[in-house]
Length: 208
Image 1: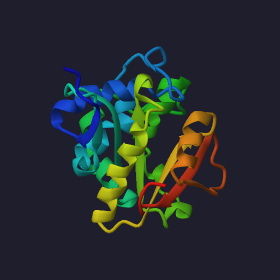
Image 2: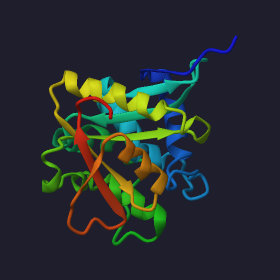
Image 3: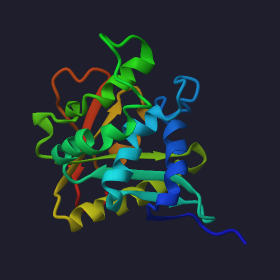
Image 4: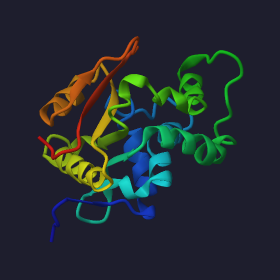
């Protein structure tokens, strides 16, 4: 008997699947395994610290057999998260990902350097949107309503904490992702010199 996919809270046993989802969606929505010698780099930046520091705001899409095939992760307080990232998360990964010496050279060093600059997440233009999130689904599970279901769970958890607004950053080139965010009520936030990124925000009230 095949069971339907459903959204549930993250469990520690999901950690390996969480990392795999992150790696297979980290190249502008596609598989990044060919880009980085150590496949743990992207999860160490964009997935695992959230599950480690704020597991109550981590939700997965379960394929019906217990396997996570998508997730939404985040924090209700970006400024607090940055402090915790530096004090509690960074010491856990410095041995595996030492800080590059001098100016980063190449994609791997550039991404590794981001580990050591969590303060990059703090921008005054985002203060009205204190929470932030990352959401990813394996390709076979996209465009089937699961992203909206994950977002509903996350927004509901933020509302329960009294958080009124959330933001995210995305690669501007990822047009399918932008179309999804537009459909569920996100709007662009003007940020000076955003580089390759676009910043989006919305209220935590429901999922449009």
